[in-house]
Each structure stands twice: as C-alpha cells, then as structure tokens.
Image (cartoon, rainbow, N blue to C red; front, side):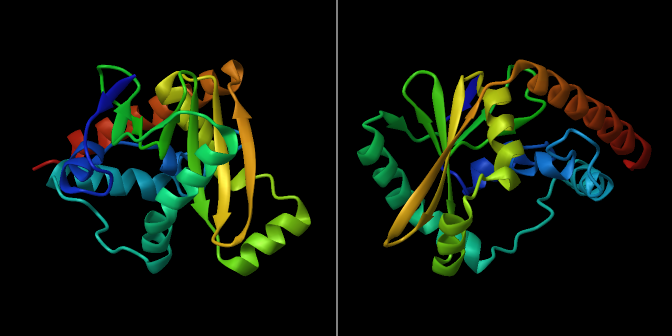
Length: 200
C-alpha cells in the first residue's frame, strides 16, 4: 500500500483521485456478485473525461455527504471507545507504486484492519436495527479497501447520533479480491483506450 498524507476532501486529495477508480465507486464497475454493473459505461465516461480535461467531473456536494463527513469524527471516536482499537486517520492510498486505483479509508485500525462509517438519518438507523442490516450496499467499498490496503478485515459502522450503532466486519476473501481486481484491470484497459481515442 502507498499511503498519501493529505486531508480527505481537500484539493490535493481531489488531484490524487482524479481519473482513477476508487473503492467507494467500485460498485459503479461491478455488482457485489462480481457481475458488470449497469453504471460501468457512465463511470468510464466520467473518468475518461477527468483524465482528458484534468478537471473533476462533479464538484457538487450533497447535504447528506456533508453531514456524514461532519459526523465521521464522532463515529470514529465512538468506534475506538467501543472496541479499544488504535485508529489512524489517512488521506488516500494506492494499492502499489503503479497508482492505478486506490481508496480513502475513514480510518486504518491496529496493524491489520480498517474502518468505514456511514451516517444514517434516525429513521434509517432504526429500520436497520429492526431489520438486521448487513451493509451489503457497502460491501464493494469495504472489500475494495481490503484489496488496496492489503489488510485482513474491514469494519463498517452505521452511525446515527444518539442511536445504537451497527458494526459489521468484512473479512478478507482472496478469491473474491482476485476476481474483483481482474474486473478493475479490465475497466482500466477500456479507460486507457477511451482516453487515447478521444484526446485532442
């Protein structure tokens, strides 16, 4: 793993991510069952556009994103208090020196884990608690973070201020990660070809 020392959501962070697939968007390339996603082509266009123009495609921040970013600190503090783990904030990391794809972990945990928090509106958190939420919609991000960092497990926390949190652990699955990486590499091949075809 190549760790980059930068503030998440800042200018340097945006530049590091420009035109490359990141763990939070791997769901745009594939489904959790590792089939190609319906949004693959649109994501390919977006990243190709970023590579060609050198500009970020979407600069609009949604209120839910802002709230989640604001509450990330308190969620991570609660996680650390509940688990007793050592957590470390990190800006961005690439899988290796090739810098082909990467991830922005919310935290690295101890020597072999990671942490991702998702802020939930109170009614959403209550529904998750009542229905036994498994965090499936965030599996690709967590597994992608494992792929990038080489760590053994990734904890996902659903957090809503004042309501009991939900903590789910994703364990490393080498067969899944191998297939996942091959799908990302095929996507990168198509991305490179599109950039070469349409660059002025």
